Length: 284
Ligand code: PLP
Image 1 (cartoon, rainbow, N blue to C red):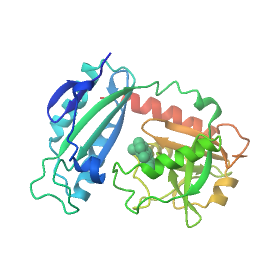
Image 2: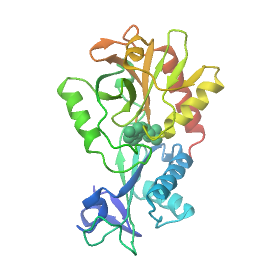
Image 3: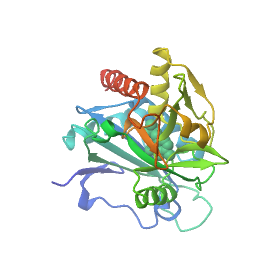
């Protein structure tokens, strides 16, 4: 079954969906993206993703080819046209095609593409065991707050993690954890305090992170937004990652050593349950 893909105003079978070889997304990674989870045919945390998309486009001076109402309509239509019950919607907007030149084109025509990826987001077997991570140097560019498609280093980090028989990488800069290859990183201290890196250009401002912090504060979990060291992560009682594709996922091993007792921790499990309950109720 071919998926139906959205490309610049058209709905096309995936084999017919094409963009130009001159597209600046292809030649310069001059493009931003969003990934939104779908459960029960509904969009999870959509408002946050739409707001971050607007910010990413603004930071790069790319004009959105669609307005807010059109964007929501396209998301809803792509779910319906692909009969997507559970999975992810991938959206990318690039500056569009232009003669290859380092300067931005004068009259760009941005390219917009959306496609669906069916996936069992909720029933992830790793939730029971947690994932293992290895730490690697963070060698990405310095504007990680913009969700660009420059994903080569995260991809290399993930490959290196797998080569070391781990599930993912936690990236380290100046002794501090920045984030995972494609998720935000968090720890819980023995006293039950949630520590997570504050929002700067060092990390992506995760939509799931923001929702989980709100829920944690609402449930009386003390939250400290600051950079934490690799050593603190090793000493933590619990660790977890957050992202639109994994929600809240326990991290139970760091560099081969167990985190706490090596099992998913109670704070992590409560936050996962609370995120799912709350966000399913608010899904649109
Ligand atoms: N950090 C990075 C580097 C990511 O790539 C992602 C998601 O793709 C996240 C964090 C999590 O962000 P969100 O919760 O908005 O999916």
